[in-house]
Amino acid sequence: MSDSVKYLLDEKDLPRFWYNIVADLPNPPTPALHPGTGLPIGPDDLAVLFPRAVIEQEVSTEREIEIPGPVRDIYRQWRPSPLYRARRLEKALDTPARIYYKYEGVSPAGSHKPNTAIPQAFYSREEGVRRIATETGAGQWGSSLALAGAFFGLDIEVFMVKVSFRQKPYRRAFMESFGATCIASPSDLTAAGRAVLTDNPDSTGSLGIAISEAVERAVARDDTKYALGSVLNHVLLHQTVIGQEAMAQMEMADDYPDMIIGCTGGGSNFGGIVFPFLGEKLRGGRDVEIIAVEPSNCPTLTKGAYAYDYGDTAHLTPLVKMHTLGSNFVPPGFHAGGLRYHGMAPLVSQVVAEGMASARSYHQNECFEAGLQFARAEGIIPAPEPNHAVRAAIDEAVACRERGESRAILFNLCGHGHFDMQAYTDYLEGRLHDQDYSETELAMALSGLPSVESC
Image (tube, helix red, strand yellow):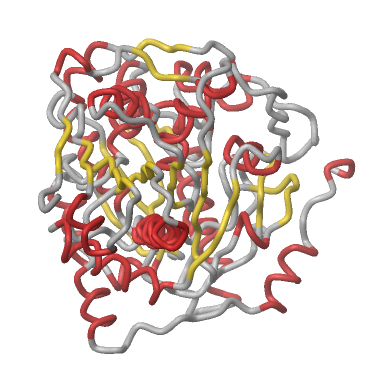
């Protein structure tokens, strides 16, 4: 039991379709609402932001949506990604649990984000788009869209949350290496950014602010579209290649997960690993326990309200029903920048609200502790974001040991930490602090949730 085991699929096993969980949910998703009228939005309302094909996927109820050939051709550079059984970690924990992890750090950008960046760039190029504006937290999404822009000949403009812009200079260098422009947000390039800086010149930024800036830039030019790396239905749809591959790999291992764990910020990697398994369960297949893990200082699922809210700070985006901390909430500047979003994907929110998954939260020091424990056993240094899933997986494996119970635990290791070594240095030198959010600021943000009836 001393060596980890890798399960590899052949190129021919690359999924041909994305899986849409909307087709199998017991209740249909709530509609997105126009920010001005409060009425359900239609495809034409989204046309200023997204290519037509992406809009069709966003509102689709079809169970399977075919992956275009050019997208699959690029996927083949790293997909199917490997699934590992973490036998060395099992031994270190002295647990009877069987721990598996799907490793998305093998992509060119080092995370799961290219799974949706590639198709979004492809559909934009097919529609004649020349530029894409976007936001990024930790930089994984910005890096992935920069890569996709290089593949399809698109100019990419990335508004990066300022605290991450300062913490992760090599992410900025990665984006610029592929020809993208990277801007610290809030910036003085947009009305949304200038408004924030007027109120707080030292603002560390948030994904909500960065989204506002990117959306503002996109709607200002006819040749530009907007792309989002998480939250929306079409993004989670594209990520389901992860779970579909994992199902086939678990079959190779002659096993099936009793529990699936994923970290949650906007919900894309969680939906990617979970939704194919959950869909099988909803269609009468095997049961599986599902756990969403988030940071304690941005606790959307565990502390937020399940309500209609804006996806951005300047209220330029449609209202969606989701777990939210309020669009004006700015979380502390912790290192898992990809999890610093005030809201949660509507589909993930619905799954949790309807009892199909549970949620828990951890502070960053206990997550970095788990990340190093994992790295020293398995040889892969996780990004700060999946350290939350690692923490939960270790805790569950220890619980199995204490109960004398053997369960199969699957989690998504959605990216490596090679661009995050300053965070690990800070942790090892005792400079990484667990910052709690302000209860007063959270209450104020939640008190400002929009009244749908008054929109």
